[in-house]
Amino acid sequence: MSAEISAGLLAAIIMVESGGRPNPPRGAAGEVGPLQITTVLVDDLRRHGYTFTYQCRHDRDRSIEMFYAYMGIYATARRLGREPTPQDFARIWNGGPNGWRKPVTIRYWHKVVAELRK
Image (cartoon, rainbow, N blue to C red):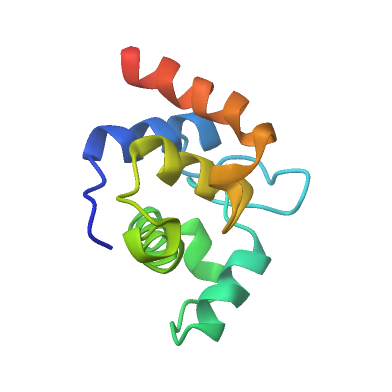
């Protein structure tokens, strides 16, 4: 991943996902932890050679590692055809590998921006 993800952006995404709570309630799609990670995301990372477990989703540091791993796979200049922006990172986190193109993720990006402005 060539573009840098700021600590502020990551903190804003955590706030949008879980309100910053260490043990937030399980989401509607079974997502858990501070970054509200699904089993599908863990399985995807495993297919790319990572050894994360479902339990890692509950640990803040391991969740952050999964976030960076996911961005390293899907939010790259080679994949996007340009350097990824903070908006790309957020929208990919919310909408999956092609989330940066999905109109439905724009609302999520606006929530992240609102957190960044706080």
